[in-house]
Image (cartoon, rainbow, N blue to C red):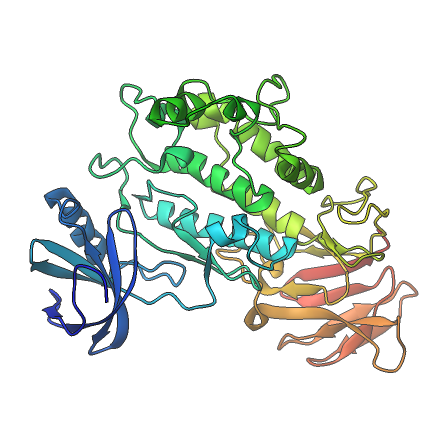
Amino acid sequence: MSGMLDGGTRLVAENGDGVEILGFLGAGGQGEVYRVRTPDGERALKWYYPTCATPDQEAIVRELVTRDFADDRFLWPEAFVPEHRGSFGYLMGLRPDRYKGLPALFRRQLRTSPRALLTACLYTVEAYQALHSRGIAYRDISWGNIFFDPDTGDVLVCDNDNAVVEGDASGISGTMEFMAPELVRADPGARPGTQSDLHSLAVLLFMLLMNHHPLKGRRELGIHCLDEAAERKLYGRSPLFVFDPADDANAPDPLEHATVLATWEAAAERLRELFRRSFTTGLRDPAARVRESEWRDALRAVLDTVVECAACGRQNMTEPGENPPPRDCWGCGARLVLPPRLTVTTPPPRTEHHIRLRRAARVQAHHLLPEPARHDCSDAALVAELVEHPEKPGRFGLANRSRGTWTGTRSDGTVQTVEPGQTVPLRSGLDLDLGGGVRAVVRAR
């Protein structure tokens, strides 16, 4: 076993729990991670390299443990483990195997889907929004700290030991590729916080959806040695978005950057517009950066309108709302045929959700709320789903997966009661009362 701590080493956490080293899990820039046994079961132990085991880092970890941030999207520091052989560490939960690192995604070693990636982006935005709402800045949002399930889009934020109370100047500033330009330049008064986190978040979302960095275009190809000075120019002194509408000096190269040209073309315009704002005015003015709430609303809307191509079966983003513009499949080029649309209207403050009724389309609990605190696309939050008639292929209905009874009114005025577990045939004009002041209407487009 390699690493600073040998198997069988016994430590004692500050909360009194005994800690036994079981095995080496991996290493990063600040330290190593071990699988350990504790009275509460197996956990993970992050152990700092002696050079990183500074008084400032110890103060940060102790503060995070005290905050006791209970959120299943974060592997939060749970207990401080005091000094042993010139270093210290902290306990956290183990990362389940289903969560994969983003480098494997960028190397195309994972099988996933546009819907799963959009879900991962939505969950990531909400995770950091939850952190920011508690007055905590993450400061090191990057590809190395997010893990996701390529099947479901569930996310897990790891390496949370650099998060600090907003305004605290101690610790690191971030990873260069993700740092806000003012931090890269070391502008007077600039310090990592929630505003710089918004830039890092936008970079991360762009990389998740486009598989490319938003500032790496033709200019990077002209750099012979991408050393620190070159990076500071690329990300800080003269950053330029690869799709800047006013300046194409850093546009993608058609041969070297074919992937980002294709993924940008396949993205919904509603998301492209937010990226343009993030990496044009947002590069210059931190106050103009896209807020988490804007990302959340756009990602949810686009996620609800992903459809499969009838010709090749690939998933495609389409534009939310009524009468979207025609769109061709990014995979085979065939014109997409849009299925009917379910418009869900919530109680005041009135909000409309437009859900494309593709095969196996789902209505989730968050669709019934004007301002959901958290989105959940899992089976546990399922309210309704589109199902095909078992004996009549091509005939579809909306199955009630909730615990309440619906009332459906057809276009001819006839009324039907839909009990939990029952299915109402899908017809244009069908008006469903889902209870609690929520209505859902089937539209042809």
